[in-house]
Structure formats: structure tokens, C-alpha cells
Figure 1: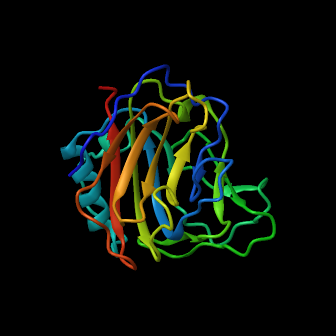
Figure 2: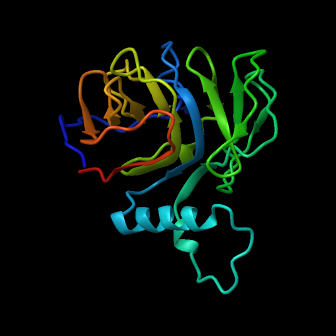
Length: 231
């Protein structure tokens, strides 16, 4: 359920901009309020069937410790360039210690921010989840080429919002790029004040934007996925 509202032009250039989980753009003060779990970034546009398979695998894994005779599901991780489970017992909140671990194999580990915050992971959808207070909590991820796609991208995560935004771009679940640079193409998912989800690809002046036609329920876990195929 989505609708496209504009057209992106210019180059897709996010190198030099750090990915942020729970915060919109490095220069803003817009933070997610709630919990975020199982954050994944793929370097291609996943199909609806692939997204559904990922969802079904997650659902079957909930509360299950062993699955005997499971079929090969390596396709679920092909093209996976970032995967933050948020399962750590604690984080050192100093914006420098890389304890938010990346399980994609690309070593895109994150740092808990801000300095001195008490924002250790809490019980989540699967294992633990990142806890974000909507004021200043976020995760800063190293900027790498693997997280700077050139044509396509998919973002997948479970979110549990505890409050809606105060403005249209107030509660961002994940973001990479500088939206203020007119020639750069940022990408990310935004939880709107209307409780809809938006995936935005683009700059301050031109962008592609897909908005969900259904709205999320507060204080409930929801699987949110956004894909961009470059068209």
C-alpha cells in the first residue's frame, strides 16, 4: 500500500554521510520514540515474495530454539549489507564504542549515542531491541561503501512506536545521507505524525517518496519494509 509523490533526479551519492538509526539527518533534532528491532539493509529491491518469506521466517523463529530439517533459506541474506539485531545486553553510550553489532558480515557496527545516555537494549520482538526515548537517543553507524547503494535499496525492520511525531519528519527509524544537499540522494524510513510510514529517496528539492495507505498502531510491533528499484 503506497503512493509515489515525486521524481528523483541527480546522482545517488550518500558516501560521507553516516547511517543513523532512530534519528533523521545528522543536523536535525528529530528522534524516534519507541523500540526498534531486527534492522536490515539490502543493496537491491526485494520482491514482495521475498519480503513475505522474511516475515514468515521471523514469525516461525519467535519462541523457537531449534528447527530440524529446515530448507535452505540463504536467499534471505543474499545482498544483505547491514543487519543490526539489537540483541546485545548493554551498550556503552559514548558515540565511539562499536557495540551495536552488524551481523551481515560487513562489520558495519554501530555506536550508541549520545554520550552518557542510559539506553541499553530492552526486551524486543526477537530477543532484545534498541530503546529510543524520542529526545536524543540514536545509533551512529560507520559510513562504508557497502551502505552506499547506487541504484536500489531495501530497508526492513520491526518497530514499536510509543508516540507519533510532532511534525511530518519527526520520528525517523533509519536514515542515511544529508537531506539538505540538493545533489545528494539520501534514503530512509520515516514514521509520520499521521502514523503512516514513508520511504524517502532523494534530496531537499527532488525525491521519490512512498507513503503507506494504512497507519501503524502505537504500542504494537509492526514489520516495516521499504524498497526502491531505481525506477
